[in-house]
Length: 244
Image (cartoon, rainbow, N blue to C red; front, side, top):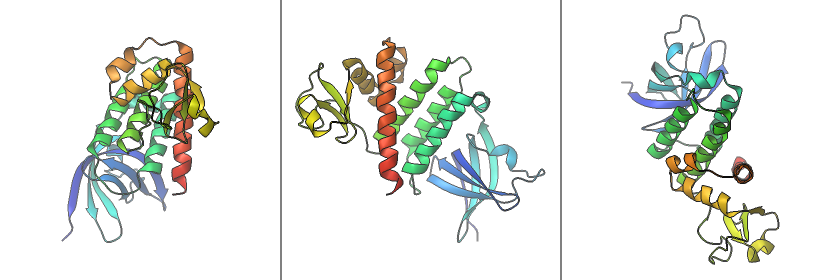
């Protein structure tokens, strides 16, 4: 007898198969990442197509077969319609999808990541957002995503020598996995010079404090510096995991 599973899931990727089939990559509330096969879903008369697509939050039902999971029902919960028509929001959504693809390989429940995804897309879907808010939303997601996976950077003491940090001699080292002091810059000459405002923002993000982070009044130069640190760290992590 076939076993049916039902759960909520965030669809972050899709790939066409054969003439009318499709495979969805879904991060679910109860089962973690799943690859779900949807037979004939691209046909015009498919009853499933309205309930599932990329960047949808859906309630899905599937059957576990010998070699694959096959979709049997899909009910739309949230479409995030503000994102689909906005190129910058779509770009950020694609980066989140890449992060999930690279760092989450198997089926393992993680409700914190599911809730982080859900909250991130609710924020990004807000029609009242100004464009300058889009990137901070992604940065907030990225650092908390890495933190949940066990890749949080060291921000409280020097990641090299473990000494107390001097606010006037700070660097961010991808190699050492966090902030290093001026003395330890010799360990990693590729480390990026940063300032105390960038460190402050990073610490607030890692405390999972969106309210405080979103209200900070920080100079644009420090915000750009945090963006640069974040993108460098992301690329470093993606590169180190793409071949693992």
